[in-house]
Length: 385
Image (cartoon, rainbow, N blue to C red; front, side, top):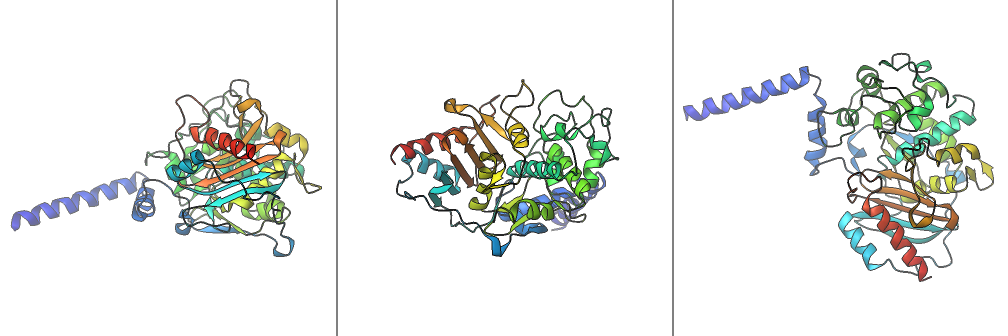
């Protein structure tokens, strides 16, 4: 018994020392991450984790709701077997096909329905870029502006050269390490941070010349969100509500996840909404910024967003992924667990998929396997109409 007590005391002391050391080294957020993720039976962030973070409401306008019309062939064509198999494998919660601005097919799974809130994850990057477009249209900021003008505490050899365009096109040259599974890297720290703005200004450095090379970094969008907030004098949630949620007649309010203390929006992720309201951004960009006759974003800005900035990365524009699959110009928003809003303008087609898993991306390839499946099977279904 005495030996067991000594072992227990040793283990307890060792654990206590590890905890103290981690806190002293600035890794205290790991315990918060473990509590939220592992404590809820997950191994990574999950689509309804907004319940465990502070959020800010993105208000809609209940007296100005625009309802998606249903296509004359609404839900007449059943999903293909391959699509159903993919839904089961990837734990899809929502899948919409919108043809000619009308919902042609709509299905929900895993207990979710049309009003269920679900995490956008990195689709928020494209929506934050839409906020940039609105801020440019409103005269608050320019693509060519130096970021240092809004964030004078930014560090690094090339901090003075970094432009807003560099952030929007993921070519900042920063030292951010994009890794979702290593708890000691900044991506995890940012997700569970108590003070995002402090983290960004303390740890992010612009060490390489910006505007030269595409590198997907969530930190770029977080800095972009901070620029927009500083330039407009509004929170991102407030500006999103004023600029898009209300004018586009969103059916339901959304929630944007914040850090704990500073109450800063996670611009790189975490707008919690539903498939129909996410789809509104597909319609807006498909129609080059025009929403039912009102020009919300400038056409030139949309065309720029959906075009590659760098010839070395033709698969990425300004916070939108790009593809020429099937010989068609395709652009899409994407989240880490297979969140998609895919637009194919030449066919007046929008595909929305929300879910709990994403199929893997082949090594060195920009588009993951499930992207091709969702496009292929949508066209197979349309053949039967």
